[in-house]
Every structure is written in structure tokens, then in C-alpha cells.
Length: 377
Image 1 (cartoon, rainbow, N blue to C red):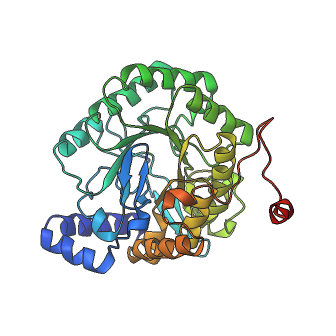
Image 2 (image 1 turned 45 degrees about the horizontal axis):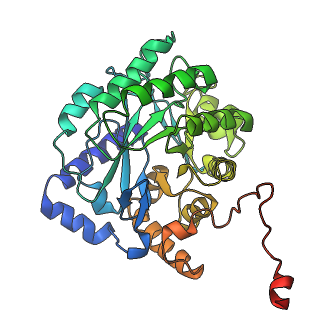
């Protein structure tokens, strides 16, 4: 099937399965998996497991009833925008089978914060933990700082009583006006006003989602701003643009086949795996583990998931594995995580976070004794 048609067909099936307790139970028997070692608490929110759905799949928040039945511990809905967004015209989703990637050119299509929040306000999400991803409406190529901030504020206000956490998405690669909040002055203005207008309305943690294509000094600017403004964490990372990514087969990219204008679209899946993990390691060390990290990008197996966790991620998001490997892979990842935890002598996910990414020593901090000195003692 054409990828976008396949996406909508899968959504319809998911909506149907989620409408009836019998179909939910049957789905759970095939796909769901529970184990106490997967239970984790992050920013005072209890998750039954750390494996979540990334924003970008359920753009209108229609499938929350079925996510627990296929094994997800959390799901990030959206991105939602203050205004209704039709998204970009033409073909917007492509498969790169050999590269194990999906190319996305949606452009934040969604029904708008008011309509979606009105539908979700009385929904009981049960054991599923829900993130609300807020982005800026993609309706004009012209950037106005205050209008853009007001757009984020509108979405977050609409969802102030819905879900468990917010993600501020400043990193969508498919919008008309680019990524203006990478600029520190713009970002400071956004984070300041969110603190002033949203924090009094809700005690939910707020995370910031970063782009995959930033230089380290650009990442540091954003991370430092998050720390200074008191934000709880970051989502690392969004999609990868083809121009700055060497982890795919260029001939597979849709622009090479005349299916998409050159430079348009961005990749999820395997091309993002190494990039996102490197960013996770860097941010974990720079913040000394004080910021919550949600790791996203190229998680296809328990080993991939565990690498991100041991690099510093407390939670995970994924989409592409469901497309290439099927929804049963969520079950397999959770089962595999239990085995990997046991192999390393950990009883919980929290114990494993950052365990293979030792933090740099601070000046004056005592050094750990060497193995030789320990043996001598």
C-alpha cells in the first residue's frame, strides 16, 4: 500500500480494536507484557514500562484505548497546534526499505488543539501514560515571535488537564518557517512565557524536543536554557534531515527518485539511531543526569532500547519498528529489556539509566579507588 494510506488503514484498525473491551483483551493476550522490573517512576509519574510511542503517529489522539494492549507504557500524542493544520501538499510519507527508514513530509497536519482537547477531556487513559506534544502551527512561512509563542500557549492551555506531561516541539523539520526557536533569544522568550502562563495551571512536567541535526554547541545552548528555566527534561531527538545524515542509502531517498523536492522531508528509523544515542550521551554528561531524557530514534530491538537507557535515557519513544517489524516488537523489546537488566544485575530500569555513560568528575571530587588499590585493601 502507499505508505500514507497504510498509516490511515492501520489507524482505523487500531480505533476499532480499542472500542470494545473484548477486542482490547484479545489484543492484550497476543501483544501485551508485564514485569515488575520494567516499572519506573520519572518526574513523579509512574510508568508500567519505559517503552512509548513517539509523537507523529497519532496526530489527532485517536488510538489511546489500544496502546496499552500492544504493550506501550506511554504514548506521546500529536504534534498538536493552536490552529488547524492541513499539513504539506502532495505525497508526505515514504519508505526506505534498505535503509530501514521512513521519510516524513507531513508538516504537522492535525485537527487543532481546541477540537482534539474537547474530544479527549473526559477520556480515561487507564494504565497508559500520555504526553501532549505541542508545536507551532504550520500555516505561514512568516515567523512572528509573539504569535508563535501564543500558539504554543493556546495548545498547552487547552490540554492543561489532559495527559501526564507536555513536550514543547521546537524541532519539526517540515515546517514553512524552519526552526526559529533554536535561536537562544527566541527560546528564552518562549520558555519564560510558558513558565509564566502554563506552570500556574498545571504541575505536569514539561520537556523540550530537540532536532537531530544540531551542532554540539547548538545543543548546549538549548540544554543550558532548559536548565536555567527549570524545565524537567528533553526529548532526543526529532527526525534527521538527509543533508546532514550519512547513515542511509542516498539512492533510496524520495528526492533522488523525483518523488520529493530536494532537501525536503526527514528520516525516522535506523539512520537516526547513532545520532540520537550520541546526543543522549552528551546531554546526560553535560547535565550530570539532572535532566530527564526521553530517547527517540532507531529503536528496533531490546538491545537498541537498552543502549539508550544505559546512555542516559529514562524513557523511550518509537514508531518505525512497528512499521517494519510489526506491533509485536513492542512485546519483544519489553521482554528483552527484562533479560538485559537481569544480566547486568539490575532490578529496575532506573538503576540502568546512564550506567554505561559515567559522568565526568567535578573539580575537587574524590576519585574512585583503582581496582588494584581495592584489592590491596
